[in-house]
Image (cartoon, rainbow, N blue to C red; front, side, top):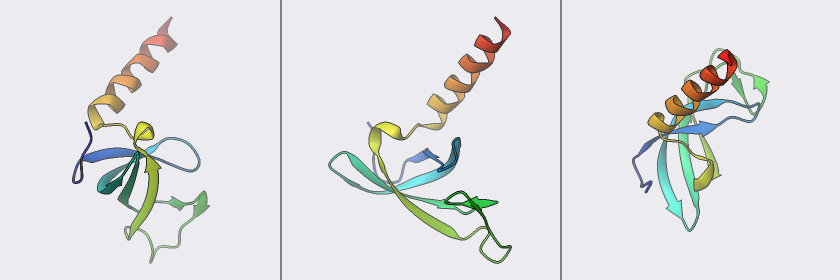
Length: 82
């Protein structure tokens, strides 16, 4: 079960995931924080905003632990080999 402080993979607007942390949980939703990368909300980020902390509220069922993320990635790679 996920809890406040857990490191998770947060789904990105354009697909994929980014490293984040759960900062609050209410019912079945989690407030997460994560560092801004090359894009934010699907748009390029200027250099002064890169690395700043951003926040996103996500359904708990959409978050992955790092272990779950790595397992999913491995399964996808194995399926590509078939």
